[in-house]
Image 1 (cartoon, rainbow, N blue to C red):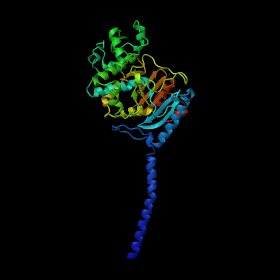
Image 2: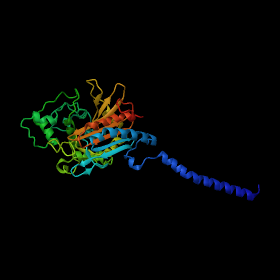
Image 3: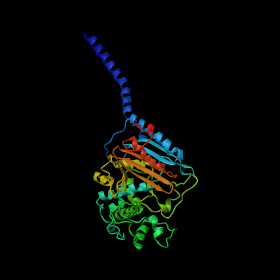
Image 4: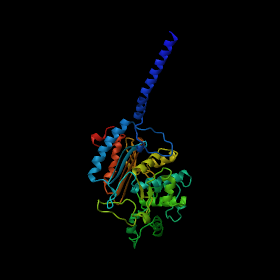
Amino acid sequence: MPKTITAVFLLVAFLFQSCKKEQEKPLLAEALEVKKPIHDSLLLSIPFPLNSSYPSEDYMLQKKIAISNFYTKTFEPVDFSGSFLVAKNGVILYEKYRGFENFEKKIPVTSTSSLHVASISKVITATAILKLVQDNQVQLDQTVQSILPDFPYEKTTIRTLLNHRSGLPHYSRFPETIKGWNSKKVLTNHDVLDYLKRYKLALVFKNDTKFNYCNTNYVMLALIIEKVTQKSYAEALNTLIFEPLKMKNTFVFDYLNQKNDVSQSYKSTKVNYGWDQFDALYGDKNIYTNPRDLATFDLATYSSEFLRKDLWEEALKGYSYEKRGVRNYGLGIRMNEWETGQHLHYHNGWWHGSTSSYVTIKKDTVVIIGISNKYTQKTYQSIKLSRLFGDYPYELDSQNVEQ
């Protein structure tokens, strides 16, 4: 073949391949977009390594349709005011915000609104204690009295506070048992400890003999956190959890200074619950947060660099088997344990008009969060959505249970 013909042939071949590559570029880019269609606004992150992957576009679309159907049928008929979110592996599958933080001022609930999650605060308090265990500052089976000398019950341990097996009397019943009770006094955590000692209040049962859910346990745990860290409960949680995880809209309620600033709690759109003498107590409640921050916290529970795996295992196992049944309690977390071997962890909250639900499906790396500041028990129905992610024995409409 003559040299001129060969040169022309090679030039044509080169131009053809170049054109072909130029045509392939947008196709390749398009293919990459299909593989990673998730918008950054739907991603949650933590500063700890995780071994997880993003769900597919088909998976996300399928779940979003099913969750939307559930939300519409469950929450819209009750004129829901609050926030709702479902995420998998740090990817938000669905979220919804409606109603008002403050109905009088018409301040709407948004993705950054901090609402009172009531007893879900116990999950955070327990995690703070476990972080202190990890740092060798306390031990789970250490007696409370060794840290709080004024605590009057010798055998109570940190573990039996965490799993509600201490038998401590309920502070909400102090007015019934203490003569001359001052109903106008707003109690502090230290007041609760002082009353336990001063009035020698009897245990409901002997330590570690059975389960009895009691807010007093977590009021004491908050005092332990303060004593060990030499910080206020709010400052300690900021240091141990909120700041490391960048939970920017999460805080511990300051009763004296924030009553007029936080989201309100409602019986109806026109009736505000107001405050009572137990509203300054913390550890058992009084954490304000939003679904995105809480889902970020949940994501951290899958990282052993945030908290050691063996400590999560201690927290997630059941401790009360005196009676047969599905329900049990770990260290700051509720659980359902079915005979089929399925396990599901969660915690609900209620205080005044605020109700909340935190469902963490460990096997399927899914979190479901519902928070309301206008009273409704529908929030607790959120756990039924677990049926969308595994073989959990909850019933939903057929159109909602597509796998």
